[in-house]
Image (cartoon, rainbow, N blue to C red; front, top):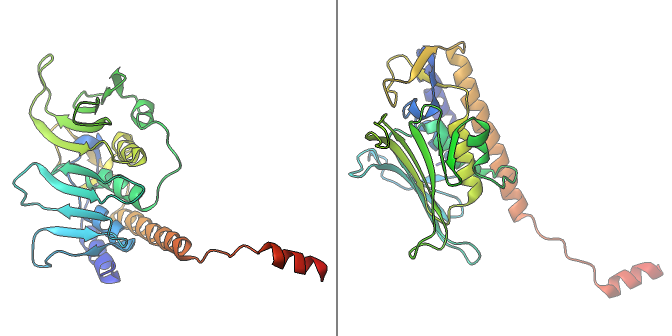
Length: 273
């Protein structure tokens, strides 16, 4: 079923009574509202194929290639899983995300799946521009050193490197503390999707969380937001409408019949008239 006006209205009603707090850094903001992800995909034509009475949500793309699973009862640390089936020209790929990954950051990834951003040649560029520390060519860490990005090298089991992102408790010296959340992108995940995730993660602007809403860590900084609740709703609605329009435009382009080129005889006849 496509995203309905009733579902958007329910989102708006729920946020109308919330007092938004600017919360940062983003990697510590907490999970937020999963509808930032699911509303965007539904607006782009993804359909729910899971049991509506189950806690698990499974969405499938219109072309049936992509499948997103959200399982808050997962026995593993991965609550979100996204798979892409292989095609004749592209390899399949897999990405997963932990419970406390901010939904808005994950939405940066899924939005780019719907509407690819302008070509980004270097996935490291977002974190470098945001002032993250580059300890080597294949690692980066946030200014507070709690979020780490690593590009795992090739091995006998992989023909390409894979991406690993982890947010951890502060450790001691070279020893990291317990893991708060993780994200993993296998070796075939398109680079522009990884870059979009890192762009949303490293963005300096705070995320909005309601009063008493769960954060990823007690050291997250929260301040009363200058945004009114309606502004938070309006931003969500505007994004959803934009995704819906862009997805429809992309589908029209894909189904547009190709123009049959004129044959040499036709061109010659037209030239004689």
